[in-house]
Image (cartoon, rainbow, N blue to C red):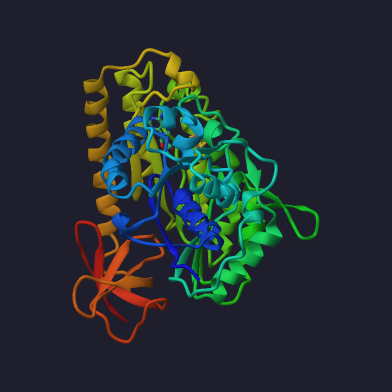
Length: 440
Ligand code: 5AD
Ligand code: SF4
């Protein structure tokens, strides 16, 4: 047998790309590839890209420029671009950067072995179709090595919401839910391999409506409840959700499903009804605040996370203050905030942009508030007893790091616990980016 070829994958963007990168590595296994952490050793380099904001796409082109050195040193090296930039730009990538051999969109990963073979014959290979089949059905069954205690599982992909600023409906396509029986089987397999916490992924995960084994449509709440019956699985999370798809059963599950963790990422984007309308969000600030109240009634200790965009076209100082007011009213334990970035092909890109310094100023003000709230939420954990799932060794000798129910990183000096255990920890300190405590 010939030596295995080495594959280096660099992942940008969201957790779904992290999941997809793992699946791409598995898809290329039968073609003779094993993964490497060292790009200079690689026979193939894949960039799994993100197109959500301008900076994300530009980073890909600068990285490709840097790879020229490796390609000069090893002309047999194949370079591929996968993910959402591949989908959005297609052939343009090869025009702009001739060293690229392969471009593959997010719905075509099961075709990677054939595309790779084409590059070995010296041709360029491109596939940015939206095929009918489920790409995951065609990937080889996962090999069965043990895994760390946490895993992602993509249950739904694509989005039909068409927020006016967002490329996802174009790069990931229409909403597709994977069949529930396959997801249950995948979850059981992950648990058999040592996984204790599964995060269900989807661009619009709470719109999940997959075909159940009984022929009925399963909602996300149903899927979560069924997964909660898997012995050995201790924790379930899901991300990312649209407010309009939080149905009653999913809200109830936050209160009555013990394995569903008290953490919810629920983007609102803006607190101004005028801007929400222009964004095509199809909800108001008020309806979002009411929704959060209902979820917190089901689960009072819920830690809420959100996404915000400042400087959307037409946003006035008064609109921006409405966003600050919403943040004050809701209270976030964690948040991601961005300056609006025009994405070609989206409706908002047709509109006049705000000056850059105005966007920067608003982002700084919003982040100051969000950081204060996140800090307060983290500090409030001091003195409490949390349950921590230990994921990896810490930087200090003997130390272990894990995550609490609320997704804060927690350090303990070590002791009678191992990676994969869930143990009670008394929190004694809140540091810059993590908590520390002692085993109870
Ligand atoms: N500009 C800035 N932020 C954006 N997001 C999505 N599209 C854009 C854009 N064009 C943000 C949203 C979304 C998160 C994943 O990225 O807040 O929820
Ligand atoms: Fe993009 Fe999310 Fe809006 Fe869908 S719901 S268009 S993924 S921001």
